[in-house]
Image (cartoon, rainbow, N blue to C red):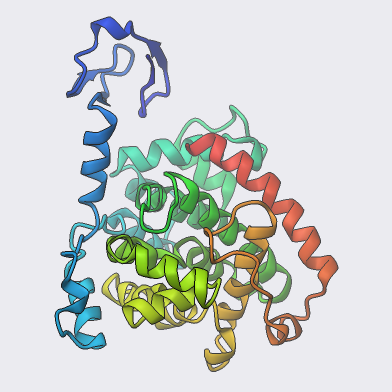
Length: 347
């Protein structure tokens, strides 16, 4: 088995016969003495542990007489096991928004979380940023990347564990939702940079977590999958409509509530709520940006799953952002290359 230390990035090859199968083991890295942890449980055990990250309803819970509002509240209340947004992300954003802060200040915040710090160094040294092998410290990464790009990188690496799980209800293998989310975020950044520069970081952040509602709903969707499949087969190919018909609400509504639980800005929450229906967002520009970016992610080969892909782009969104089909084609090509380069560094 080949392993890599997350602290110093040194790789080692260990004979499989010397590893205690079926257990989780930790040992110090010979090079830097950092902690290396290996999960050697069998696949079924790992899948079971992953399932416990989200709330799993009883099979008949959605038919227990609860109103739609009460069921939504129950779902939000029951997802305390969902990985929280890392504290370092919120602290870093606070420092970055302070005009009196320095690169030294932000470096201190990032270095409090060694796992995130290591990922930031990997991304900073990736081909995407053109700095391969040139960045050796968080302080140097901060100076070279600049505040705006650094905030995007921090947000990116902070959400990998949150979005990297398998979603059985939605039929998404591990890593699929993460790549779709990253592609959407990249497209959001490109659109905002061209048409709404002041929203570039906000658009990137919302793009990354726009489908967080699927994390919370996955267990419910799995328990009702036979009804959902029947709806998709007999009435509509839209998974969004199937969620509404079978559960009484969809993942965008749960995403809105979840974003409030995470104490995200209201314009972020609204963009997550209306990214499939930006015309209902009361002029929320972020919602229109994420809506188009979501479509670009699909075109780039990183769709959000069966029943969500291939939906037409809202004409008002295109007109409001003054975008043409040739713009979308150009963004799609850039997103395809960007996601491949970034995921090579992170996954």
